[in-house]
Length: 291
Image: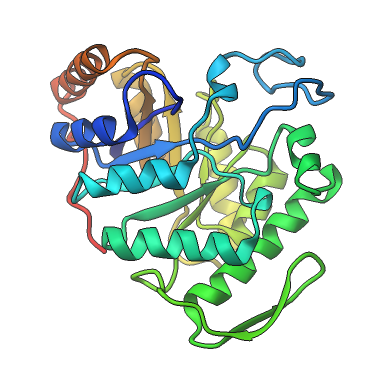
């Protein structure tokens, strides 16, 4: 089990470069950032945590572009994994997004992981022309189209929401692919989607009772004929030896902790305390990146 950091990026507080550099120096294995292109002022969609139109954090309004943020992080790091928790691919043109992700993966030495969401904010999706009832279908097509561009020398795709003829597109990701994790509630529907179209699961904030759910995910994964086990990234809030041991036994591969919305000195102090707690529990933070 490896440990990582998620920074809810905004136009205030510590920068992604400073946070990623400090996380790598402390020994953490991964660095995650989120995405929202914008937040419509008038919304019908309820936030999963609040249950209504209110937001739990005003950084939703101020979120940095994830790929710009991760490129800044890549420039000052060498080992740490560069990931999203979560990005919203359906809010982009898939051809240009594939190019952006492949470029970052190429320049970072194969360190990119695409954590993707279906999008709880359906009003935000609507502004990008994505019907709420089709968001999972659109995401599946976009991922398939991007994988074609990443893996083939001449790639084409013919779908309902994205279509292009045989094309050249370089650079390719280092491994001609980028791992895709889906951040969504741990339901059977989510797990079947993952088993068909992704490489693993990112839990949602507050999902801590996940051992039984992981058993379901592993069974669905096996039934789909997928080899090995899916990657599972659990969002945690405070290190607890008993919970971490239970997660490890259940098949959690990564545990990620959020950084506070504070200035650089305060965030660096938090990172030091967090790494001290984890190592004090006898838990190695991570391993060197291998492309």
